[in-house]
Structure formats: structure tokens, C-alpha cells
Image (cartoon, rainbow, N blue to C red):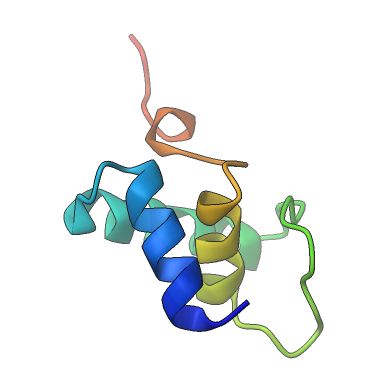
Length: 71
């Protein structure tokens, strides 16, 4: 899948809110860099953590609710 298609699908999953998408991708990329398990399908060794995070959002594997701390 092309990058533009992945981004469009990820934006749909966050109701076209680019700010939310950037927060989710940043947090997830940080988690992946710290050793979190990759949830997306079709990932290869050459992909960056941000690309993997975008794929996870586009595939519906993660969302904003994964990063909200409930007190």
C-alpha cells in the first residue's frame, strides 16, 4: 500500500484530525523504539517506527484510547 493511502486510512480512523493522528503516531513510535511489540501486518525491516505506527493506526490496531491515562 502506498504511503498516501496509509495516511488517508489512518486519518479516517481518527475522524480526519491531523493533530490527534500526529500525537498517536509520536507516542506509538516512541513505544516501538522502546521495544513494544509490532501489531501491524506487512511490516519489513527497513520501515521506520513512525511508518509502522501509521500502519497500525490505519489497520485499526491502535487508537487514542491506548494512550489515555484514566485516573
